[in-house]
Length: 458
Ligand SMILES: Cc1ncc(COP(=O)(O)O)c(C=O)c1O
Image 1 (cartoon, helix red, strand yellow):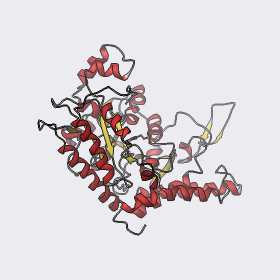
Image 2 (spheres, rainbow, N blue to C red):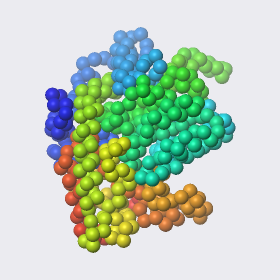
Image 3 (cartoon, rainbow, N blue to C red):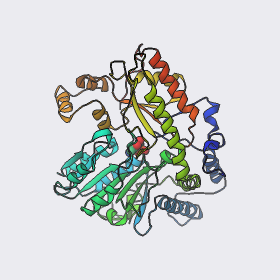
Image 4 (spheres, rainbow, N blue to C red):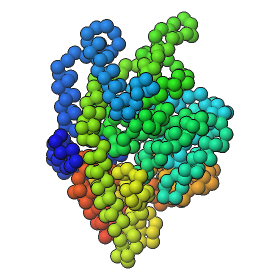
């Protein structure tokens, strides 16, 4: 990698399959793409070593154990975390990392759960564990521009009790980056903080020395596209010590008895790793972290910021023949405190949103990959459609909807959510322009026609 400030060369070197397939990939917030060099390095490693199930004395096992420990070190370095203060627990994905905390955190009447109206379903689901333990559950609402007012966070943290505050470093729906200073503020107020960094770390650096979150959840496929199936809970050792696991399993105990209900938990991180780790994939994390470091966050930032600006400029310029805007962007229009995720609705001339499946269908036909729906972030969809808590409660009082369309019908909204385009290191300007062309064609064509596929979910 000899031109770290210009990433266009990566397209041909690492992602030739995109142009070979005529594909414009704009779903980087869904998953990054696998660089060829990482895939080849993985195959070469597997073809030249003998790797067994880790943690026993055999040479094959020891070879794996060594690589697993190297991967932990690589993750700590990636997050700027000291091994004295932090441990790395490997999980299948960010969701599993969040669930580890949810099921083991000592929620109770004096230990609430608080999260943002911008959190992912994988965080929202924590409220089931909190409610079961009798803990208050507080939602900090979204404010203007899909951001959250800092004063609302302060009020939430000061409303009684000291529990767990979970927030996304970057919204997976709007690209908004929430202030990392909230980590320090919440900890000073006696709260533990779960930072959902899944959407942020692919393009935003995390330094846990400066931002000492108690728990950090991330998925590797979002950072470098490869490997899949590996996530991490990077956790402060003192915060892990406070967790009480609800069960034990292979790998998480030092000893146990089949006759009595007794077990001796393994210390962290192993005590949190259920079953056998994906030991052949973990060395890929070490390589992926090195690959990402070699490119450098500055170059990534420069690359994706330019593409995001091009996308935003092109979308906001789209007009109907009568001059009315054809696009509403859900999220920031400037590059301040945002990542490279752009979510929007096409609009009818009367300003109502177009069913997002129209664009999904046209984009797919043009081999442009993007996302539609609410991206597992119902708070942003609710905010975009003006659904107050009262409206949602009233809709649910009309009966439990059996499917998404019935739910939307009860809510009387035209669009389930929106269209999300997100860029990354493999994206080039032509990809962005292809999406803009698809949008322009739809707008010029009057946005009519058959409704394509049924909705499957959010
Ligand atoms: C902000 C955020 N949190 C959590 C997740 C869940 O990640 P995973 O599906 O890898 O568990 C995602 C995935 O899109 C995300 O963007």
